[in-house]
Image (tube, rainbow, N blue to C red; front, side, top):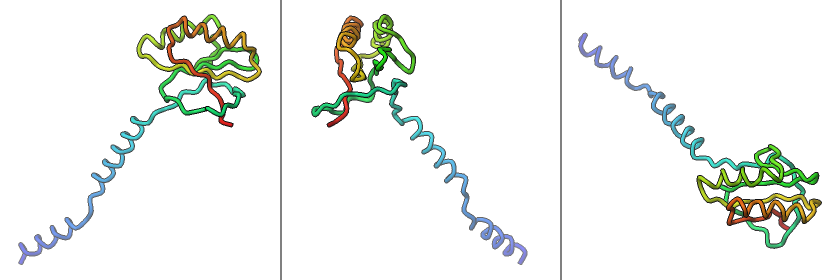
Length: 135
């Protein structure tokens, strides 16, 4: 009789659901989604972009250069100036060929835009686009 009682007690204990594997799986999925998420890098400044009817989405893996209303040339939230554009872009393009996207404020003179564009080409950028808003 004693032996039968221990078998019943063991069965009662084994009826419980073990939550450890479920929690482990949830954490593994969470880590997977965090690691595989693509983060979009912004320039760190607000730019009033012009509008264009032919605006389209570009690749997420790209170099963003902004030119503010005051004529500041910004990369990654830091002002690099016109003279720093070439070195920054050349360094970034050394590892991998990426498109360059210029976010130019509509109040910026064309002269400054062309000078930055020239620095980008001298740095080795082949695919250069200007960011706009859709009409």
